[in-house]
Length: 431
Image 1 (cartoon, rainbow, N blue to C red):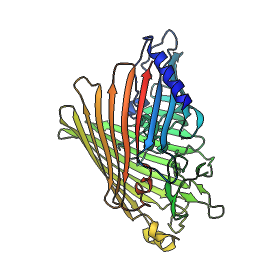
Image 2 (image 1 turned 90 degrees about the vertical axis):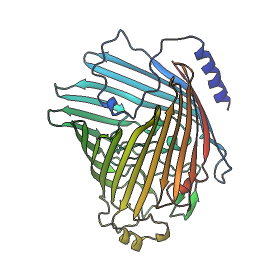
Image 3 (image 1 turned 180 degrees about the vertical axis):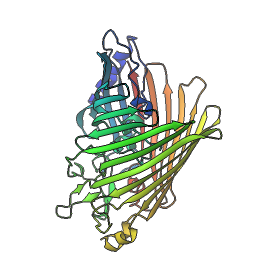
Image 4 (image 1 turned 30 degrees about the vertical axis):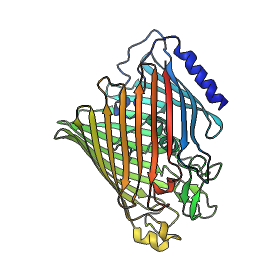
């Protein structure tokens, strides 16, 4: 708490001089980030921007596994971009004291060089945030790492995307565009492991929360991701491929009992096009479990087919709404039930999910009200994310919201988090 108070004092000091400012709140969800940078003109020198932020979050009711604090961030972000001799260098670095886990953390979110190999080929190497696909908080063909602890604790949405140490080649052709991403060493998700949020473990048969978290076996193998895309008459078409590992440690070593990331291959496609007064999108993916292609090993996730339909449009002036229908079809489900040591807790063969997003902005665009909701008809559970954002000026931004979970059973995807309902407040000063 002393550190948070110190950070609050720093925020006050930083607010006094009106320094040169840049745009705040870069949107890492925009696919446009992939292609940005080449129009950047040479500058006289690197300009350092960033923000300082305080975030506090608390559980709405007592938990038998944790204290009330779910978010206790004192964060400083510094970032800069520099163009030199045909190469654009990007650096974004965060320093953080996480009071919820009582530890200091440093994270380089961007440390990359982007340059042109030929007239049609670009390259970007180093640490970078990567994303693609058409889903809103649903990822069928996006296998770049996610930070689910940030997502459920109330940090800015940009922190759901964790950085990758990767090399990306982009080819721009008359008939087709390609992105090829090679990650030399597997980058897993920052999954829910118990130190911040409790979760259901079928091997333990109950909700657990190890104080130091679940220690999964690390993988040293590489990952490959490919996207081929083209826009034809306003219709965005894309095909995807991925060769790597399950991003969350869902497999269990039968000898040691430790979770690990099993081998995975995925192929998929998507389409997005104007429809009526809005935008329609559809996406499919086939996830092949390479470590258990027959689906007979209960310690390894089965192959899945995933499908998504989405639609978004402005409902009335400044109010936008969207809806998504999502399916996870577990293949070889009968074999999984027959061999599972806990068939009562196995997922249903078809997990269905409906999501809605409502976003309203006032006339001056300084107040934003939003509500994102997940509801699973098959599991009868869900997750609500109401949020209010207020931008006082170019420097100060205030955000508050909640993460609410409801369920019928404690072992379902959202139901396992029912001890973790939380509310949060974030104050950010941009400079």
